Image (cartoon, rainbow, N blue to C red):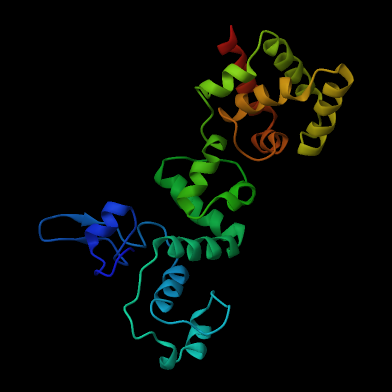
Length: 249
């Protein structure tokens, strides 16, 4: 990536990016990950390879295979050595990842869940839609959405000190009472009822919303907390809040 030397497999291994298209094993039994194993889409790798030493002479950077066939011209191939840019390669991957339909990504994500031994009743297309913008690889979807499938057993220490106060237990118990009455259990109804209660009681949104998010997620991340609760469902949302309350005792 830097300098004028050739790109070696150990460069990639040391700097955290693949060099080979597929996993490669040396005669000394060293294993080097490939683009496929690292989760890159074929379209992204193709686009990256096309731009090594060539450019179309336009601002366009994303090309399908048929577009590359039409646009490629040997006259626009650089005479100098091509410089590999791992960050640009990841950029191509992100661009194609964001173009993928959420349902297609959900199918790939389901395979990842199966490998982890996880079965779920949740709508994976909806889950993917909620976290897709913060992901570049299918594996990133797990990092962003794991809390949907694995309820928190610990809570972020720094956030807990800020969110969990003396009155938090009582407030969360009030939230549970409200949730039990909400039908249908939709994000819209949750937003209306719980935010309305906070406003009417003049509680302060942070005193409720922060501990609520921690209860459901375990840390201060994720999409809208009411969307999370609705997707988890009433029973699971209440169970997670009750668990958080038990940790406050």
